[in-house]
Each structure stands twice: as structure tokens, then as C-alpha cells.
Image (cartoon, rainbow, N blue to C red; front, side, top):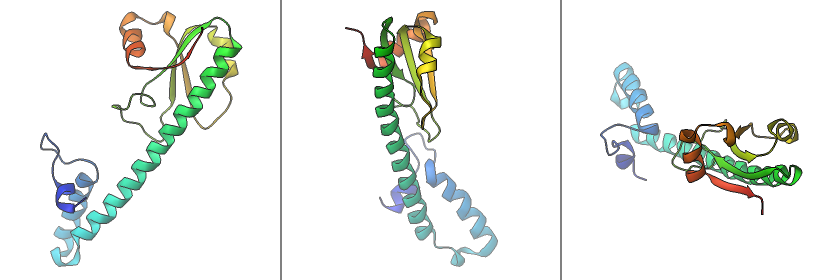
Length: 155
């Protein structure tokens, strides 16, 4: 990626990601030290590299969270015969949502005993939120069931 494209605004004319950060750094340094003391191209390359490395770490964690959630859903479904379906939703599964390194795993459960299922969630690298979809309003459950990822379904 070239620094010219990287420094440009998004489609709405806003600076994004590291470009916004770089703008603030460049202004501070240039106004305080003179433009000859700062190589904006080198700074842009360093920030771009850091941004890309961080983005890859975050995406790797998202992939690991999905695998962990799939395994957990299979375990929960097998342990409680009243579970009908487990759906992964939220930023871990919905790629248009921003995922952070500290994002949790949201699992919507149809059927099942929430207390029993909660007790079966082992300690692990991810925080898990179990949501009883049977008890939620349709305005919540409809998008979860439409956009979520079915991880377990009783046959």
C-alpha cells in the first residue's frame, strides 16, 4: 500500500485508522520541530506495518474464537438434550462488525437449561455470553437467527 493511498480519506472524506493517528503525530512534530526533522513517509510505513500486524492478530483471535465456540456448542448440545439450537452471533461471527482482541463470544441458545449450560462452560481464553433466545423479544431474536451462525442443531 502506498503512503499516498494510505493517507487519503475514506469514501465519506474522513481519515481512518492509522492515517488519522499519523495526522495528529505529524502536526505535533512538524509544528514543534520544523518539517525537516520528521520523515512522514517513514512514519507512515511504520504505522501501516503496525496496523497490519495488529489487524492480523485480531483476525487470528477471531478465527480461534470461532473454533472454540463451535467446540463449546457441540459440548453443550450433547450435554443437554433439551437444547434445540445454538447460534453464534455478535462480532465474533458477524464479519461486518468490529472485532476487538477482548471481544467475547455470544451464543444464542434455543431450549436448554441456562443454569446447567452456564455451569458447563469451561474456563478458557474467551469470555462467553449465553443468551436464552426463547426469553428475548422477537426484535432481538430475528436478526440473531437470520445473521448468526448455527453452531449446533438437534437432529
